[in-house]
Image 1 (cartoon, helix red, strand yellow):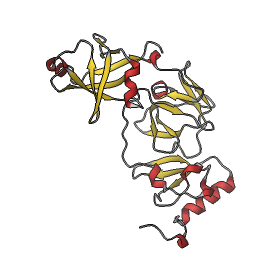
Image 2: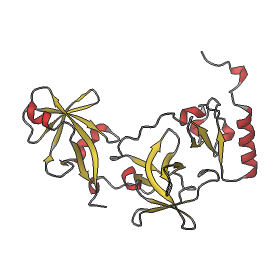
Image 3: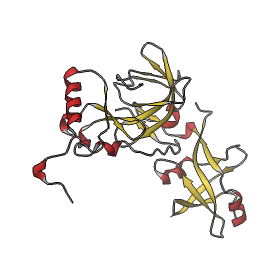
Image 4: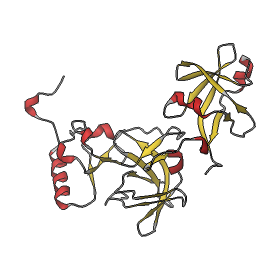
Length: 92
Length: 169
């Protein structure tokens, strides 16, 4: 069931507070959060969050196409390495 | 770098009774494995040309040169297929093969060693470099971005990073 529009997106209050403090300070830092359920808001774009996966904080660089998703989607709780083969990484 | 070989797939034994072999591809586009042939075994004692016959569950049914019977195919079960690194196509700037990044030394801007690249991960956001710290089993994850990883020097075998505060805590 979808969330009612009138409620707006859910974000834990401490995440908003930490993001705002980081943006005001202008420092290059990882914002450690435990709230996987919080929605990614437009004002988070450009910040780096360390999203807890039950083991460690996974760095998540927020970009525009991630708005509306939940932080937990970018911090998997299980890791599968696989083979490198011809896989490529792009420096953004 | 040209001497290096890369594992691109593994054989899974016979598929049917006509000498076809089950193949599991490790390439980013699974069917692209056929473009990299011919393939060698790990000890380079055998070489195969490959033709993909059809997709099957978790891989492909393929025909390999010199494999004519089910018994031949079954004997290859678990064989890894390798190709020379030089056979992979050139990439544009700021794009790198995982195989090239893995094993590079990681330094900070002052030249102090921070570890080595263990793996390259992608969980949907930016690519992440998993870095093994020197003298420790612990790893740290570093977003693979221009600001955090300004220099990648494949010839020198090192990358220079400017990690954000709190990343190596």
